[in-house]
Length: 398
Ligand SMILES: Cc1cc2nc3c(=O)[nH]c(=O)nc-3n(C[C@H](O)[C@H](O)[C@H](O)COP(=O)(O)OP(=O)(O)OC[C@H]3O[C@@H](n4cnc5c(N)ncnc54)[C@H](O)[C@@H]3O)c2cc1C
Image (cartoon, rainbow, N blue to C red; front, side, top):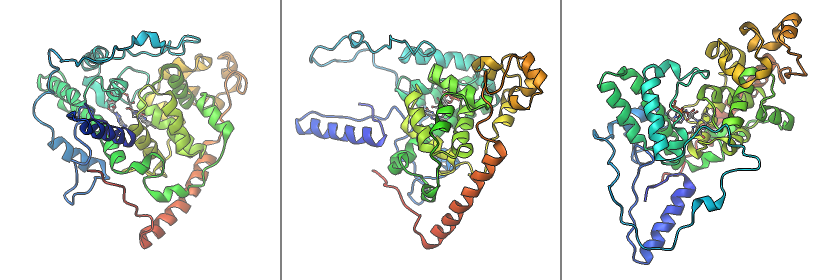
């Protein structure tokens, strides 16, 4: 069997292997879901890496210089009970069919097709293109990777081959491989520090005085915060089950820092709605944005949703696609409609508070509130480091 390394799946597989062994059945576990087995990439001191770059360097050295083993031509299938017909399970949603906007062909053939299109059309400009949500410039392989429909090793091999044949610059392939390694870093961290799916990786952040704000949370989930880039992202997620990475960072930062709502609320919503929902990547990225994770963004770096929109969606392709009520607003005001003169708004058919919400928080005030809370946490952190109480080690599994 192919191994999975999330804490529950890991324990389940160990139980299964144990039970099979007890009845005399040999059981072999293989690692196809990750580039390296968690626990095998350790620092010189034999400890898990907590910083990404040295982890990546060490991991890439372990990769074999050959492609992934091809699938066998035939598989001997043991005689067993009849299988159900999967269509008889009626898994596809029908009343209503909320999956209409979902753009995936599950399975290995779907994954391979997506990879070829990506290598042909987007890999050559990946380092820059990956930040532009209005373009199809990332691979969209995340659900295929999550469900084991394509292996990370075959991806690394394919993009390296494209670079060595001169189709793309090696730096573009390396950037893509670095993203695959972020996935790997998340999986290794969760395996080694299983508490991080529920608690802050840096424990001093567990003392953060999060707000309870059901109305703010609902506005965020439904794409009605009044900040166009945030709302576009949340609507893309709801309609398609996927959201662009740059926008995931912006919406996550907005929830945690502008609304000051616990990152676990956002993580739970992503878990319910993403087609690529993956415990390790989801938890690690939420904690990265919140500042509480391993090698995380500093807490005081607060994304400004307006300038992020102006920088990464300057012509408004992304916002206009997901927020039709703002389509006619000129680019200049698209990412901050409340700053537009009344005549501009009425010519664009926008009536703030009616056709599109006013901002539910003021950026500067929200920023000041978040920074104030940080002061408390960082002073605890210093105290904790002095007397050692916050230096909790995770469990390192074999
Ligand atoms: C708050 C937040 C939550 C996230 N939750 C998830 C999640 O549940 N599942 C998930 O697969 N990704 C998650 N990501 C990471 C990232 O957004 C997606 O992997 C990426 O957007 C998927 O699109 P893609 O396949 O086109 O990516 P590409 O840019 O084509 O990258 C290729 C692959 O690299 C991996 N990758 C890229 N970026 C990251 C990253 N930051 N962290 C981990 N792996 C990465 C993914 O497996 C991805 O498929 C999250 C990011 C944020 C900021």
